[in-house]
Amino acid sequence: MKIAVIGGTGLIGSRVVRILNAGGHEALPHSPSTGLDLLSGAGLHQALAGADVVVNLTDSPAADDTSPAFFQITMDVLLSGAEAAGVGHAVILSVVGAEEVPGLVYYQAKVLQEDLLRFGPVPYSIVRATQFFESIDEVLSWTGDEHTVRLPPTLVQPVAAADVARAVADVSVGVPLRGTRDIAGPEVFALDALGRITLAAQGDPRTVVTDNGAGLFAAASGYALVAKDGARIAATTYRDWLAR
Image 1 (cartoon, one colour):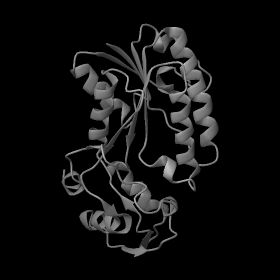
Image 2 (tube, rainbow, N blue to C red):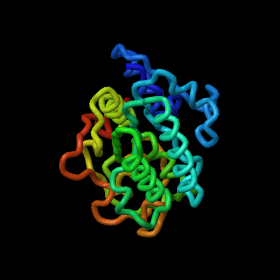
Image 3 (cartoon, rainbow, N blue to C red):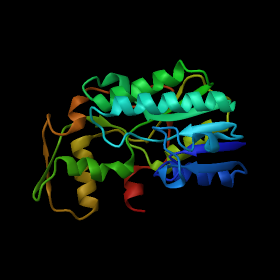
Image 4 (spheres, one colour):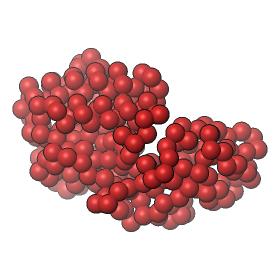
């Protein structure tokens, strides 16, 4: 298959491209660095020429009030271009539990992106992932200072980016799901406990303080960010990933 991977130079996209090409497919990465601007559509006709599948892994530059407009515009542009190019399968990467966290505008923007694809003109698949192992340091930075990191006890089930990329690649070469497939790591943690594990592994002497209102993930409650029945559970544990 010829597969256009938009956002194909990023954390997930670069891995997807390598996996697909190693499997004998022709996967081509596209991003602003290769001349594609999904907001304006510049370069999209060339990116989709002859493509059987398009995988959209682009993300909003900011997780704030600008994210709904970003996903609205980019999905409208992509779906119009994919339909015109005769692309037979469109795939996006979204977030497990996004619809269960109405207090996070970014998550609601991802729900919007899913809906645009679901009701659009191209057969589709949605891969939903939990938080990446690779994003945990960034999460700690949101509410950390010289001495402490404040984190809520929100339940999370993080997953390695490599496992997410494999799930996206597998879906991309299959029949369109016309639905979703979830991927999550093998362990559920309270976020404050995960912070302590991370700092200890890195030799960071800061103290994690449990704070129910700290950071973006304080907006999630219960099991909102935990994989539901039927999710694919990846093999890589967080401690194994830390020790790599």
